[in-house]
Length: 96
Image (tube, rainbow, N blue to C red; front, top):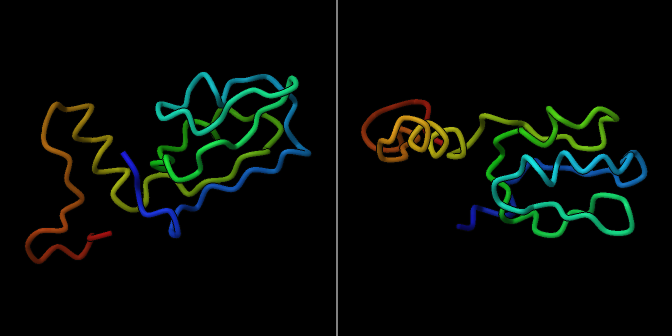
């Protein structure tokens, strides 16, 4: 699944990476991979902004505004077994 690549808030500072690999472990879309004992951003466009990577990045090498856009709707749908929605239908003001 691809998301709107130009609006993704994910930022990665490779200089701060300590090589723990947690971002690779927790990312459900393989946005990161390990290369030479450090994380590497390999597929930024696959990021759905769930925030798991940044929450597990102790040195603060990863920044992402989680819970924005449709990623939150996709996660809620996945967790509840319902159709993903970001309330874009109807008159909701919370549309992404």
